[in-house]
Image (cartoon, rainbow, N blue to C red; front, top):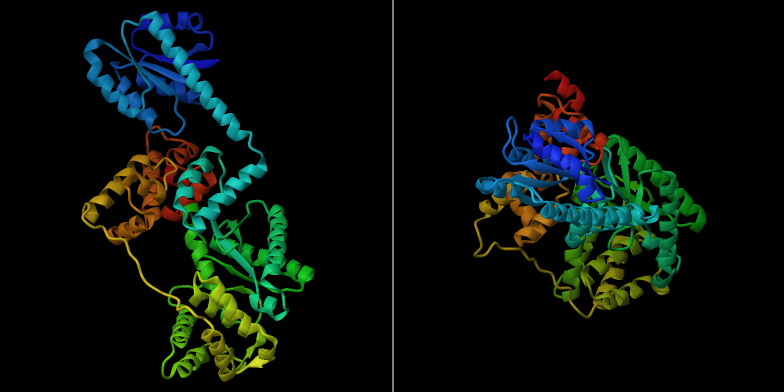
Length: 536
């Protein structure tokens, strides 16, 4: 049975619908009535908002139907609505349609028209419930796959998938974060694999072992989600109570994983934890910081969890870029190319004064592949020269390593091309107008699962360009602006009279989890929402 709430200041109208609705349509029952919009809101609150349809008059004292429609439209979980009005109230009814009203009926009510509306509402509700049941019937494995696909889309900047999967997370009530979380990235040592003579075709097997071992550990730790990045490296979302807790959990998980992999394969593991983030859409930033930190393995000898790369701590990255430029020059040729290569490699030399074969292979493979870019055959030919037995040595000084690398570079027949590209606003609208539209959309839809990809799609612009444009014009990221809008609205709701429940406020500003909302609120205002409400 579907439940109807009739809202009308005319007792005769309410009585008519109460008495005859069951006979007019067997799937409907009039489960409540109210004489104005304010009373209707109270009835909805008392019943846990468990009504399928609100049928309301447009003109009523205290709160009219238009105000009621506006109030209900702002709620995530809202009943369907039918507006009742006279001929002279059509302008008001038309305005009410802006708030998501489903039907408009003229008074006095005609029985056949009322039956048709009730039948149409019942069929639409049945379809919605069938769709919801299909989602809820998904197995736990299927729900986990949705979460993995979403995380993969976030770290690979696949905005099309984000646009589809982000609302789906909300519909399935899949909550990935209660407070903060970070991406933990792990990978085998390719230098060690090559040193042991493991062919590239066989390396996939060892990475599969790492992935499966990580999957077993993830099952033992609720909240941790396993996925893979675009290079098929194992990645894990590690949630925690705050940034420090996330870091501790990443370290503990990596220790268990690396020990297990070492015991099974004899191979070492590198790991890097990204920045702790408050929002799942910011996990791409966490992944990028982990990916940057992972480059630290090229300057290390011993396998370990690499520290995060903070602001101003990119000296290693600069040295690697200098080495890549020197390698690029060596492939072109010209006077002094080998001397320039040697000069660029020397700052990368480990404290021992020379590279182990494993470290030399690791660094050499990185440099060759970064130059070859998409030309994999060229990189493969160069790497084959790097690992040939006659080139093997226990350790390499700077001159020996430069010579070995120069020989591999000389085999690369095609010069890796580099270039830059950008997005220009062209002859379109001024940038500030685009940002204004973005802000307007955020203010209108902050309670929904909106993402940058969704907004970009609506505006016909690329997400990357829109993100850069927004930051340039506002001085803050899109996600920080959205969070601030949500938090400021939450503060207003918490100060409302009568006071709103914290869990209701959390839902109204777009959070699936009350715990996550409370955490973000405390981070923003310095006090939990309950205490904030009591202090006002």
